[in-house]
Length: 327
Ligand SMILES: Nc1ncnc2c1ncn2[C@@H]1O[C@H](COP(=O)(O)OP(=O)(O)OP(=O)(O)O)[C@@H](O)[C@H]1O
Image (tube, rainbow, N blue to C red):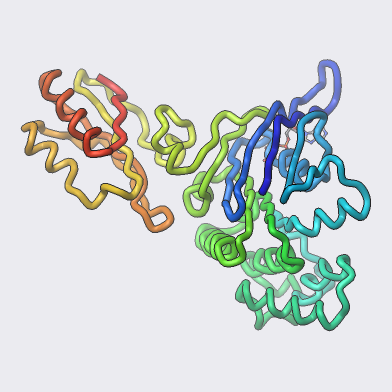
């Protein structure tokens, strides 16, 4: 649905040149929720602006829903943009217009007649849980409600893509979760493809199917969230489920990654019993992600090299992803 192929974008020149995007490629399938994480200045906003063609890349291609965005001009470009909704950190609502009118505004631009606009705005406000607030003004709404209006406005013209630029960064943790759950629900119900940029790992954990890590204009790693978790030394895997410093005391230290398949088995108790090892639990970061138990646990395995090797082989034999991180 969204294909970004080797795009680069620089600002300035000579000594002052900034490579905001440096040979960036990614593919987002229809209906997928894809998160891009990175520190301030990593290039995330530039990436989003090249996808809806607010910026043109210096090189490379952006394709959205089969259309090469770089080649579009005028009416064609405007029409392609109607297929891409966008939500923002600070909501960007017009304070002088009611909720209903803010949502209708995005439809006015498409040339839809008044009656159809009214009907569609009411429909989409209902979908985001705001039908009772149609006549309210933005100043009368909470942050979460404002973002619901932002989402309704973005989706009013029935786009197939939603771009989210730090849409939950101004919200408290509980409201963040509600908005993320709403985005996920809408994505599933409407088959909406979502690209969201964020600096918050919890956002990725809560709703993303796939994610990429950006730094200094480059993508350092990308893949499905579950795949990244089971990738050795994955930056995102470590950041999503942090376990802190590794204590080195001569014993073998391993990390077992759980991705929903095996957590209901008494893996650690079985290990201790079968190999007579006094297994030490050094840390665990396990949460329910998309209804599955996901995360990792760090264990210390004292004992002879042979016993420890046999225990690790046994765990891997059970289909578990095991990394030896210290010995
Ligand atoms: N219009 C511009 N002119 C000059 N430099 C720019 C411009 N837009 C972005 N940059 C630079 O490009 C780099 C990437 O910026 P970008 O806004 O894409 O990063 P970001 O990851 O979205 O950061 P943030 O989370 O702070 O918004 C930064 O060094 C920024 O200063």
